[in-house]
Image (cartoon, rainbow, N blue to C red; front, side, top):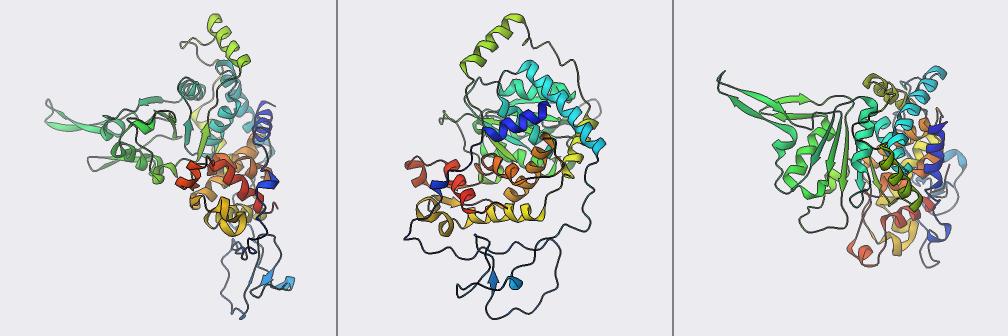
Length: 413
């Protein structure tokens, strides 16, 4: 299946963390105990013994004195919520494969290569989140977004961000109607199913903040009136990393609202030759549209199926432990790499792992998440949430290097 190949290729292009990077030097003292992941169910408080018990990063119970503790005193395992949604049925899984196949085929008809971009867009669409794309100009980001919208037969808007762009240019405004003697609301381009914010870092901080309400609350406020954005709603933002003059760095609060961040690479020479051939044949004519499409109802069904993919409690604990280590890195990955982390991931990182891993499992044709799904998503989910210090930039240390160290320090369930 096409979507199975997408997921397999995506996992293959994300190499496992190198084992040699994560081992702390002998001078580093032993890491403190990893806090036990909380039980999914609310437990009644119980009296605690004087020597508390916790689960260290290696998964072996220990006491505060460092000696081994009996297995019976380890933290209770997390259990699935009693009100959990029913797992997808075989018929629903077959329908999901059919929908994904249509989208993938339409993408391949207009896009050459860029398999990781296709997978990332599908993950954001299925998870109901937003995606930030970073690349130099000319790598078909607009074409990819418009192709996705054309396949879904959804409303697509493109906003070219500039320093003089106003918040009302995005959300909308009120215009006085002289004929009726009243104001009428004109909704802005953000009120679309698919919104492409091209070069978002060229807009001012005030304009960038206008997107926060729409991205998080799925609504805008114009003249005191609340206007809901259509469903499904997907924001695809791009930023250019090579030009700094006349740009405004995205604040951490807005970066955190993007479910994923993908870095789009240059095409291979073979793919670039294919692009030239398709231009000559007219296959990339902007007037040509997808021959087979899906509806907005199909997308909502796909999102519903994705939200019901099973995630084992052990994998939930794994996600929480990974995010915890990004906030307390030094004891687990050493002072050298851990000192490069300025701020770790917020709880949105855990939520993003949960949602995106479900979508990746569904893309692979599975109704359950495996640890490899979480590992394959580590750069997409954390590269914009783990903030590095100035020293890391000076030493040319990438966030991906630190993220690999974090994943190497936490045992895989």
